[in-house]
Length: 157
Image 1 (cartoon, one colour):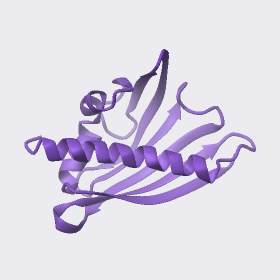
Image 2 (spheres, helix red, strand yellow; image 1 turned 135 degrees about the horizontal axis):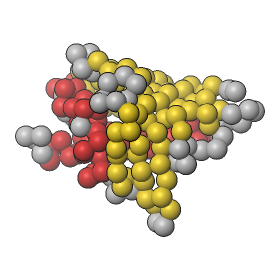
Image 3 (spheres, rainbow, N blue to C red; image 1 turned 90 degrees about the vertical axis):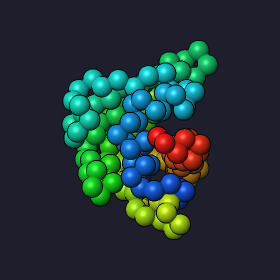
């Protein structure tokens, strides 16, 4: 098994508390409304704390896939949310799991910065290319931007 690590920051024009609520605490309600490909998010184990497992089902074209999202750590006071994608038909065959450690910190002008440390655990001798890592980073940063846009358009959320 190999481990490929990626570290990046994503700025957002909303305060950490609002972004944390939307991307973490209300993720299961908000994301199916914002992301066309997400069909559903259901709790299969737990109630949101560490050890909770959420099944995220996506539909792209005629194909339905899912991933199991496990909460590893959550700290509302310091805006920390760590989770792993541990199984499912949406997890590439070459990966054992993907773990994300994330924290929101205050940014400039009342905004925030989402700091991410991602680890991709590959099966066997599989490798991830720089292009694959960049594509995964772009996907995650796109989700942050989508939530940021929603929060800016809905100031009372």
